[in-house]
Image 1 (spheres, rainbow, N blue to C red):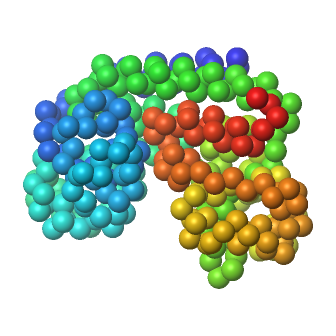
Image 2 (image 1 turned 135 degrees about the horizontal axis):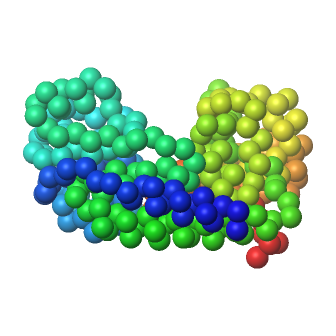
Length: 282
């Protein structure tokens, strides 16, 4: 119960106050998390275009495309005549954002935030921007209640497995999630210990360090795992075969946006990851 008050307090703080919003009718959304929140608030019918990271819900597949969230072009966005471009904290590049604002397009960029609390911050931001504070309040309350219940389950766990998150491979070395990454946050929320917590950001891990880290579980996004080939491309590596995860062939693959996007589906992601890394606790 120790995190119940925390999540409920975060929710209460996030829904206090509101900012002026316009009645936007032609929204371009960049960032799968932001797009999911817009739909979660019931405003999907206002969305005319999305970026390539926006794949949920299925209705977004019928929307126009504006490219990758970090690599937008001013011409591409303006060509669809939106009245608002709203996006994730890393939407860019900055010069394109400046050009769009200079063209008198309203641009709203989400705050970053940390851990599971960032979802509440983003829901509040989208709700205020679109003038949907009441719906945002309801979504925040639902999210906070689900996360508090999951935190209760984590508190009751007897063990915390050591988890390695591999983002991709670069020059033969796995790029892994350290502290201050979305991977670290989701691992902690699911009751695991991130073996990369000793460094910050996404960095390559050499074989010696990987063997010494000795993860019990390896987690990857399903798309990156598929790009590498079959499971053997990971589990048959000489270094991984020497770890507990390798010996047990314990490789978990999940949808990247679900797992790392930190949107309204994060409680689902936490529950699914908990099921994978704590298979005997259910």
